Length: 447
Image (cartoon, rainbow, N blue to C red; front, top):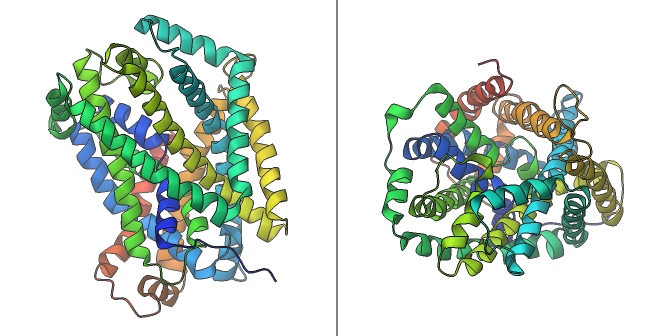
């Protein structure tokens, strides 16, 4: 039997796991969520939920993955023999395919804007013109479809390289570059005329603006930005070496993921305040508001290129990790070769990604449950499948799985002492499941 692949270095393992967590949710979604929910107060709540919700669920997935060195379905079959619990990870496989499908459409937009920035197309346009350009591009079937498919094909090429030569090599290169670009952006933003005003908005909390929806929004941001409940982190942990310190790795992933979100806020809010834009601009922030800001900034051409390059790095590392969930499943459960599994995953993504891309144009009137295909994939995966997966993994690790397995994995067979063991177990058993249930009910409109 061929030996199962794995990460070569500890740095590669952490870089890949961080790449899995860091995505558009940090660089795009966090700034507009913070902007719409009062800035500093939202940030404090977000960090608190990363600690109470994020790290415990990451640890749960890490333990299950590293304990078995198998895909999510195989891991549950081994840890819960004689039960049907191994059917639960199929939700994660389905969710990953759905997320890749609609997420790759947005990634295609990023590629379009990156090419536009490099070619000098982001010059001489008013804010209204940028809004009009974005609407025309997304509704153009050939352009939207072409960039979506190009991104997915590039994603497939990386995955064909396998864990060592594909995923780890790309993570080792792109994650350091991502942080370098972010830091360069931060330095520039702090030098802008209203840089202090932007920092004040982000770091000076106004708790009078905190409502139940803001609390739940921060909770949801912590959950979704870390890619919890998908079994992404479980799959990557199955490639970890046996001497990897799981708690330390979980803290590192959560901390670096949060750092990217905070740095993104430092990049965006000083620029927004300096150029008279609204911090609560929402999802259009990246494709309409920021291009207008780059237009007015000294060296705007360079900053536009760097920004969309940053988004591209974040998006490709995320789609690689989501794809690995189903690829590992196809390899180990359906006995496919790496090449065949990758090609199958890519074909499925091209098919459903194409439908999502066309839902802004020729398929915009085709709706299920009142939603376009893009909206349906987003809603079902984000509001139903991910929260259910997160609750399941925390309850499974905290209550069902044999305690000796948890002890063995957290202490590396008794060689480590984990001082946070009791509070961590409490959060895995009680805090994380309860918090995710709240996010789940709120996403369904029941709260």
